[in-house]
Structures are given as C-alpha cells and as structure tokens.
Image (cartoon, rainbow, N blue to C red; front, side, top):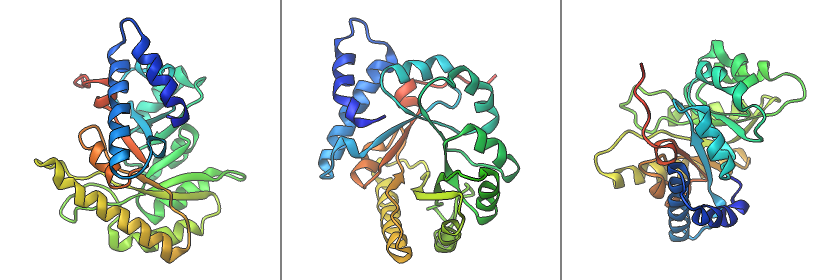
Length: 248
C-alpha cells in the first residue's frame, strides 16, 4: 500500500458505519505497523503491506484495493492465471511470492510485476531470457535461513554468487531479499532469523556495491517482529483477508 494514503485511508475506515471484516483487519494492521515501525525508529511509510491473496476470491482483492492496498502476492502461477483477468483493470502491483518452477518462468513474466522468490541462477537465466527487450524485471532473492529445512530458497553460502550473477543480467533488477522462516512455537524465536537476514543483506549490498532496499520478511503471525528488525515488505494473508477456506 502506498503509505502516503494510509492516514486518510485509516480515517475512512474508522468512519464507516459498518466496516467489513477486511476493513477492520486493515485498520488493525495499520495500527500495528505504526507501533512496530516506531519501536524500530522508523516510520510506517517505510513498510509496504503485500496482501497475499492465495486461495482468496477476487472479490476480496477488489475490496482490499478499494481500501487502499496496492500490492498483492500470489503463490502459484496457475491459480493467478485464473484470477488475473477479473482484476486486470486495477492499478495494483502483483508479486509472485511462492516457489517458481523454471518451466513456468515465461508464464510468470506475463502475470506478475515482480518475482519475490528467485532462488537459483538457472531460474534467473530463464527469467532474464523471458523478460524480453526493454524490460527490467524487479526480483528478490529468497534465502533459506534454516539449513535443516527442505523448503525452497537459496542457501546463504550461495547467495553472493547468485546475487552477483543476477546483477550481470540486463533484464533483471535485484531489489533485495526475502525469507520464509520456519513456524516456531515461540514468536520471538523468529527474531534472530529476521535480524540475520538484515545483516546478510547489508553485507551483500556493501560487497557488491549495489543498493538492496527491500527486505520482504514477516507474515500474518510475526510481522510486528519483522518490522522491528527492518522489514520493508510484509506479506499478509489471513491477517488481512481472514481464514482461508479449505481446498476442495
């Protein structure tokens, strides 16, 4: 969400006679963002809310857009292909936040404005080729912070090589890093993960002499902590849209 709209948007939500669940959720999120940003010596304007609309209907996307949300994330190319035509007239930025298979790179290029889950040089090469002349596709590198997990993401030890490779690709624009921490019993157990990613970002940026302004970390359960540790993007699904329906 463009944060310059937040103050007016929050007032609009509070002034509604019977605000919808999404409106109430967004107002609560905005208050938490402001508090967390203040605790870290930053402003709410430093944080972008990305509404993760995976498994939610397009009606909720439109509602969130009408309330001021301008960034949305989807996890699967195929799901977004079926939903995108219904919201293609919205002036939103569409993020791919889930794992992208190399054989779907070209399809993703046509659907998303930014790929936030780049995790390998072969995938980067596919995206660079598919982007076409005259386009600079923003990307974030997904970093796998837990070495014991089988989740996707670049190993931190491989990150310098991947980042350097992406910077050599003329149609990709490396904007920062993203991570999905393991679900922890103790909420504060994720804080060191976020702090470590920020440190990695700072070192990579310095070593490569390249600005990496974006840190996409923090989801519905832990976004307050992520903001306190430097997140510039938070990915919110259930916190914004409510509980997801079970797949049929």
